[in-house]
Length: 516
Image 1 (spheres, rainbow, N blue to C red):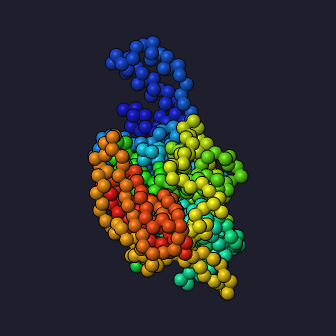
Image 2: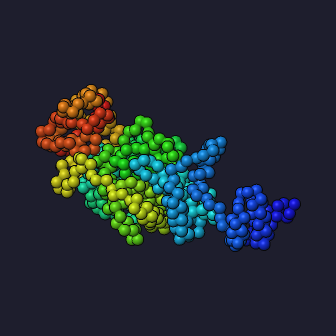
Image 3: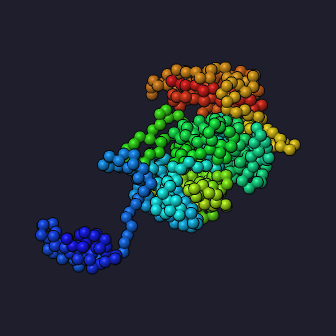
C-alpha cells in the first residue's frame, strides 16, 4: 500500500503537490481502465495544474442549517426558504460590518418576505468559527432587550383606541407616572410636539404616557398575537418600563412584529421551512389596517443615517440600557429586515446605538435587495389626513395623563385611564354605549349577502356625555357631530369589531362585538 493511500495528508496539494499529482494520475488511469473516462479525457485532466491553495469548505447559513438538521437528524432532505444568493450576500455584509465595528463585536441579520412569511436570509453571526466574536452563538434567536423598537406598536395601539392621531399634540416634559420618572436618551425635552414627531424622534416621555393610556398588559397581549412570547423578569408583571426595552425578545421576534405591521396588522409566523404554513390560529389582528399604516407613514420619514438614501423604508431603531444591544428593524412593500449589533456575551459597548451601529447595516441590506425592492403600501380607506387644527376636537391633543413634576404643569389634555378601565366599563358614568353591550354576538346576516342586497348596518346607541361626539370603528374615524348619540355603521365584513366614542370632555367608552 502506498504512503498516500495509508496517510491521505501525504497527498495534500498545498503541502506536497508532487504526491498529489501522482495520486491524481493513478485515479485517472484507473478510471480509463474501468471505462469511466476516455483516454482523451484522462490526458486532458493530467494536463491541468495541481491546486496550490486550500479553500474553506462552504458553510452557507451554518447556524440555521445545523439547527434544522439537529431537530430532524433522520430526515434525508431539508428544504429551506433561504435565497442562496441573498444569503451569501448578507453573510458577506455582516462579516464586513462586524470587522468595521471592532474586535469582539457581533452582528446578526434577518430578511423575510412579509407577504409570504418566508425567511430569505438568516445570518446568526459574522462567522461560525470566529471565536473572538463568539461566532458560534446564533444571535437571531438570542433573547435580548429591544430598546425603543417596541414604540411603534405602542403608538399603533394609541391610534387604534382613539387616544391619539399622528398630528395630535403631546407634551415632552418631565413627568412622574406611578413613581416612574422616564427621561429621554439625550436628557433633553422638546416641549409640545406632535405624536408623529414624538415617534420619529423616539422620545421616551410621550411613549410612556401613551403606554400608560394603552395599558402595558395590552401591549404584551398584542405581541402574543404575533406568536411571540415576550420574556419578563420572573415574578414581575408588565409595567411602563417595557415600552423602553424592559423585556426580552429575539431578533426573530422583532422581525415578526414588524412583518405584521408591514402587512397592515395581519399576523403571520415567519418560517424557514419550505412549504410550512405561516398562518396563526386564531389570526387576530396585531393592529387594524389604518393604525398600522399611520405607523409606517411616520417611520418612513424618520431621521436616518447620513449614509442612507431616502429609499422609502419604514424603520425604527432601539438601544438597550447600558449600550448592550443595538437594533434596527425596517420594511418596504415586500421585505422586512432586522439587524442586531453588540457583543454576544452582553458586555456593554459604550457609544453604540441603533442609529449609529445597526441602521447603516439595515439600509445597506435593503440596497443589496436590488430590483426586488417594492414601494410601501398605499393608504387604506379610512385614513384621516388632516392638520392638527382640522382634527376632531378630542384628537387635537393626545388623551394622556395630566401631571406635574416639581410644580411644573406638563399637559393640558384630558386624562385617559388605562386599557383595563376601558374594558371594564365607561370612563365617565354619564357616557355609556347602551347598545350593543360589550361582548355581544350580533347576527347581521353578513355571511349571506348577495350581489343584489345592500350590506346591513350596525346601530350603536350612546347615552350621556357632552357633544360633539367622535366615533371610531376598528381605529378608523367613522362619524362626528354635536348630537351624534347614535352611530349607523356599515362594517366591511363579519368578525370581531371595536367601537369607541369620545365626547368633548375627553370621556370615552368602547365595546367589542362579534358580527356575523
